[in-house]
Amino acid sequence: MKPGMSRRVMLAVSAVAALAATGAHAEGKTFALVQINQQALFFNQINEGAQKAADASGDKLAIFNANNDPQAQNSAIETFIQQKVDGIAVVAIDVNGIMPAVQQAADAGIPVVAIDAILPEGPQKAQIGVDNAKTSEDFAKFVLEQNKDGEIKMGQVVALNSFIQNIRKDSFNAALQAGSNVTIIGEVDGQNVQDVALGAAENLLTANPDMNAVYATGEPAMVAAVAAAQSQGRQDSVKVYGWDLTSGVIDGIDAGFVGGVVQQDPAGMGSAAVEALAKISAGEEVEKVISVPATIVTKENVDQFRAAFK
Image (cartoon, rainbow, N blue to C red):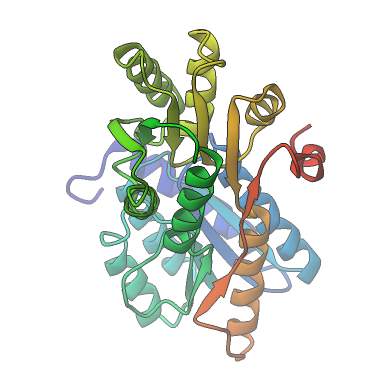
C-alpha cells in the first residue's frame, strides 16, 4: 500500500483492476471512465451514455466510482495505466490534483479526455461538456427577466469542493448582481452530497424567513432545495432555480415553485467522451473542446424531458 492510501482506496483500486482485466484481452478497445460518484443521477446518466457508445462500437468500458474521493481517482488512473487500457475519461473532483495522474497516462501513451469539470492546461486530448460560465451568465439573465417586477432576496446552495460548481456560482452571481433589485443573502455548502445538501438547504431557509429565491449549483443541491422548500411549506414564497433535472425537480416545475432549471445532456457527454477516445486511439484527431449544449427548462418546455425521468 502506498503511504497515505486508505484501505477504502486500496479496495477501490483493486476493484478497478478487476474491471479493467475483464476487457483486457477481449476484441475491440478497452476504455476507462473515472467517475465522481454513483449517487447523483447526472453521473449515472454520463455512465449510461458512455456504456451505450462503447457497446455500439464493440469496445469495453470499465467504470470506476470514486465515492467523492479525489485520491481514489488518482489511484484508479494509475491502475488503469498499469492495465494498459486504450483511453481514459475522467470526471474530476480535484481538477488540479488530478493532473499528475493525467500526465502519467499521457507519458504511457494513453489518451485522456475530461468530462464536465474543466482541467487546467495539460496533455488531455479533449474537454467535453457545457460552457458553464456562459451558461450560468445566461441563466442569471433569465432569472432577472423572470423577476424584473419584484425584489430578489436569494440564498444559494453550493458545493465549494466542486471546481465546476464554483464557476457556476461565481459566473451566475456576477451576472445576477447587474440587477438593481437583487440581494444575495448568503450561501450554504452542500458539498455535492445529498444528505449534507438537504441539511444545508433546510438551515438556509430556516435562517432566512424573508428569502424568496434559491439558486442551486448542481443536482444534490437542487434536489435538496426543492425538498427543503416543500418540507417547510415555502412553495408559495420561494422560487427555486438551479442545475439538473430529476423527477422531483420536474414535480416542482409543475407545482410552480421551481422557476427554471439548467439541464445538461450528461448521456451525450458520456457518449461523446467514448467516441472521442475511440477516434484518438485509431489515430484520428478530435476537437480540443467538444461542446454539449444545455437547455433552460421551464413549464413551457418541460414535457420533452419527462420521459427520461420516469
